[in-house]
Image (cartoon, rainbow, N blue to C red; front, side):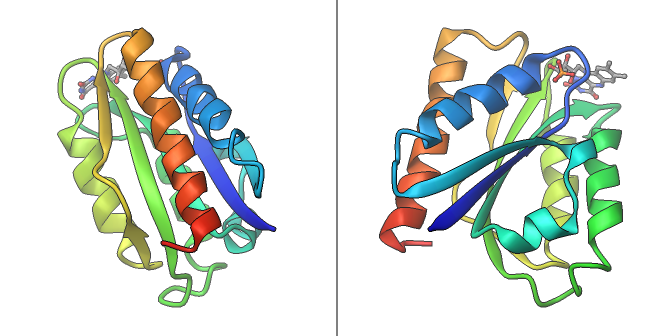
Length: 151
Ligand SMILES: Cc1cc2nc3c(=O)[nH]c(=O)nc-3n(C[C@H](O)[C@H](O)[C@H](O)COP(=O)(O)O)c2cc1C
């Protein structure tokens, strides 16, 4: 069975709510195993075991959050840089921007190399109902795409 990994970092809960919404959407696809892990609890073996990965992170100080950056710092060498080709999607939770976190993550994942299979979803401010719905749709589309072998 193919596996979708959802890795998130959160400080005040918004990214967690978005990650949980994405998880709820993804598990509707019954043919796919979906795992939801905090970035600090996830490691290179989780990344190597999955068939696709969805990152959910806040933007802090114009950058990727430290918790998500730490995940990449810890997994890069153990993942044998250059050989881990996986599709990925990204959700950024932010106050009013989000572009710095997107830019930094896109740069980092080139080294694995992970391949974007959707535009990043940027949620500004407290996630509202429609944002959680969008996160759910993203999770479902990722799981469905993996199931159909599109990615
Ligand atoms: C230390 C810190 C730095 C932040 N820097 C930015 C920023 O540069 N740009 C932005 O749009 N929002 C910024 N924010 C707002 C957070 O990205 C936003 O509140 C986000 O939803 C927090 O996600 P979380 O609840 O998952 O921790 C910052 C928040 C904190 C605590």
